[in-house]
Length: 144
Image (cartoon, rainbow, N blue to C red; front, side, top):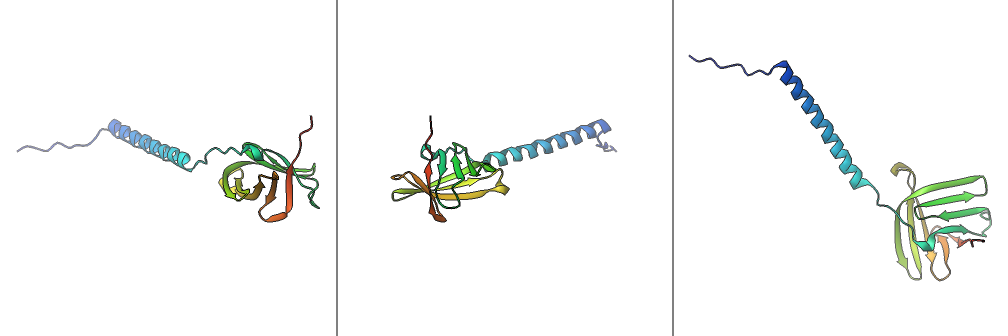
C-alpha cells in the first residue's frame, strides 16, 4: 500500500507566503487610495480674467472691505486687521441675460468648503452678491 505524503509547507515557505500576502494587501490599499484621489480630486480652477482684481464697494458698513480674486483664489479683507484668503476649489458660471451668475466653492478642504455666489454685470463691470443686491462692487483701479 502506498502512503500519501503530508503536504505541509516548511516554516520558511509559510513566512514567505505571509510576507507576499501582506505586500499584496498593502499594494491593494495603495491602489484604491490612488484611484480615489484621482476620481475625487477637484479639477484645477482658473478664474476668468474679467473677475481677477481687487473689488471695493462704497456701501455703508463695507467701506473698509475688499474682495480680491486671483486665478486660483479668493480673499476677503475687512480693514487692515482681517484678511481671509482661500483656494477656489470649484467654479460654475451660468449666463443670465447681460449678467453671469458665478458660484465659487472655496476652502482648505472638502470639510471646510464655503460657497460665494454673485452676479457679474458685463456692461457695468460690477459684482453684486446674489444674496445682497444692495452691495455693488467695482474693480479698484491700479495706480501706477
